[in-house]
Image (cartoon, rainbow, N blue to C red; front, side):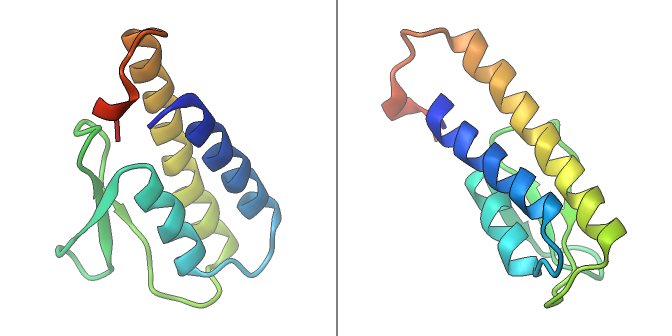
Length: 102
């Protein structure tokens, strides 16, 4: 993960928030870019962050059109991931070797 990737993801999350008719596929793509992986638990497909281990799991229902409240709650959680990635990147500083990052 680097600043440029993070900015692109944040921009896409903002676009998804404004867009109507968002599918779970669109959101899962962004979740994976933020380091989340599928974890077989619970009733709905769940994604956990394998890099930011303090982040809570997110359940993303497998639907073609997510309900607005569900969509906003999931996007809120993904935006928290972005915030945590920013903190992590800032702690590494400008001299961080990008090959070691996700």
